[in-house]
Length: 172
Image 1: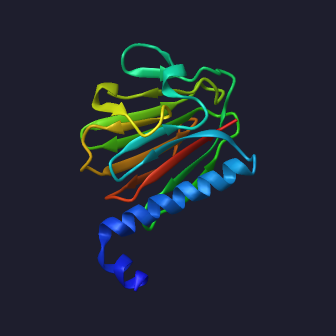
Image 2: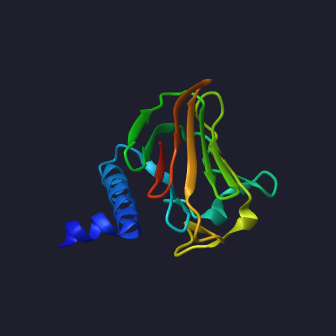
């Protein structure tokens, strides 16, 4: 019965993909492989900053938030989208993750050494989410349409999406 329901209900299937991706990220975090990740998830877009509430992020202008610990570096980026899941390791390289949602761009970047995590977006398009670590997009009906991940100067992932996408940026 569940298999049939998942097959014919695209919304439930998308929510299942997001749940599985978040569960995988939670397991990795619990195992100590990575520190408090940034999670950008589809299905009424949310940005989650585990371990560091958004109020603790510094500002660098109205559209940029800077992680309070500048010494943290990106360890990996996991992209989970229907039919195209990737885990992309980082080891001291510059990281840029660009996500497009409706007309909003979300860019997570670091310095050339992989440190100095910052998130740039139109934060006026978001409101407080379920916890102090969540931001929710004001447009709850759109989907992530594109994800691009760059390591150093090389694009290592570039994919179009149409729902059910989760991007997890792990750092330590």
